[in-house]
Structures are given as C-alpha cells and as structure tokens.
Image (tube, rainbow, N blue to C red):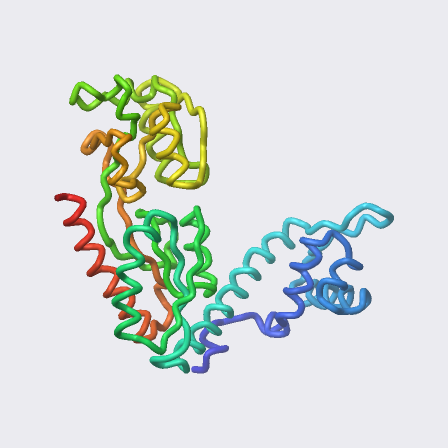
Length: 318
C-alpha cells in the first residue's frame, strides 16, 4: 500500500497546494485580497482564484467577503484550516532544515538559541571546547529573553538547538537537563533585610519592594509562589538585564529573587542569600526537535553542554 492510500486522504483534498494555503494565510494577516496579492507577489485575481479553488476542494466557505471598505475575514472553517496549514508549513520548514543538516556533514552551521544567564556563565566554556573539536562548524547564536520563543524556533526549524528552562510545554521537542540552579535573594550589603543570617520567609520577601525581570519565566514562577503567601508582590522595577537588576539591588532600591546563574558573585556590595529549598531550583536544559535528524556536530554540542553543565553545577554547589 502506498503512502497516499495508507493516509486515506479524501481524493479531492489531494488537489490542495501550498500556494492555496499561503493565499489563505496572507488573506487572514492582510485583511484584503489586494494586500494579500501584494504580499505574495500575485495579482488580486490570482489570489481570488486560489481561495475559490481551495473552497471548492474543501467543500466549505472559508472567507467572509463583506464587500466595500470592510476587511475580509476567515470563517470558522477558514480559521480551523489555517491552523492546520501553518503546522504543515512548519513541518516543511523542519524538513528543509533536516536536509540541510544532513548534507552539511561535519562542516556548515549550527544554530543555537541562548538566554542571558546561560550566555554569560555556561556558553563561553561550551563554545571554547566545541570550537576546538569542530573548527569547521560555525555556531550561529540567537539570544532571547523568552525561552518559549526560542523553543518555537527549534520546532519550526529556525534553530537546531536551544538552551531552555524546564519543564517545557512543547511535545514536539526533546529536552535534556543540564543543571539545577538555586534561587537566591539579592539585597544591598548595607541593608538590614536578610542581615541576621536567617533566611527570610516568602511572605517577608513579598512585603519588600521587589526588582524583577521583564520577560522571564523564572521571575513569574517566583512571583506566583510569593502570591501563594497571600501577598501580591510589590514590584518597583523590571529589567531584562541581569546587571541592571543586580545594580538596583546593590543600590538598595529593592530586593531581587533571581537564579544564581544570573548573579555576579564578585559583587561585594550585594548580599546573596540562598533560598533553596523554600523556592525550588530552576532547571536549565537544552532542547532539540524530537523527530528531526541531528547532525554529528549538533550531537557533539549537546554532549559538550551536558559536560559543562555538570561541572558548573558542582561549582555552584561549592
């Protein structure tokens, strides 16, 4: 039995082409046939014909055409089909990335997603070792404050690997644990708060002016635990820069609860108080696509990251 027979795709649906789905996507994002045509580089009549063909194949009206200046909109059936269409395109992009990785062999490029604390404390040693063993592979780094955004790029095939925070809600990705990272409290060395040597309770922390990260799952998980004490965290400032958060804590503007990897341990003007086990450790991992071909270079990079992660965990514990 061939692939088409085994998939049991209704025969009319075999006439669906990627250009039909691209026209549907452009129409939804642009709001008119004219703007969709400009985006795709087609004539307006060509876009109209593609949508009409798609509706005939599907057997459903996919687009509301109100006429006049009002924008067109997708019907419920159109929205449903578009969600599947975007998943199909994502898989094709992943297939393209797989073939590129397969043909590259031991040379070529490796695209890796990173976030700030990993980029500062783990990545440099990983890169040093990897570059020594794989000198012909160019590592292309993409940094984001959102590890969820990086995970989406891995799923679409725009990245080969990414450092992430676990657990990750993305069943299409395989994740490996690098290390567990304690949460610590940063306060000015001259402040009275946390100066007794006693670890403050979560309620006491929630009552203080807090400095947090703007786009960080780690911060939001901590704030959720503080809210569980019955107190809404009093956030006085947010930044996406580790140095800014620590600098404001140093100046006594507020206190900050951050992962230890995000801290400059040589700052003598800041008191660092370990909050484990009151706040569970952050789990730092690396993610790759579950079904994609992984080049030898990608596998070597993961192995190197696991090695450095284990060594960093031992250093942090010490």
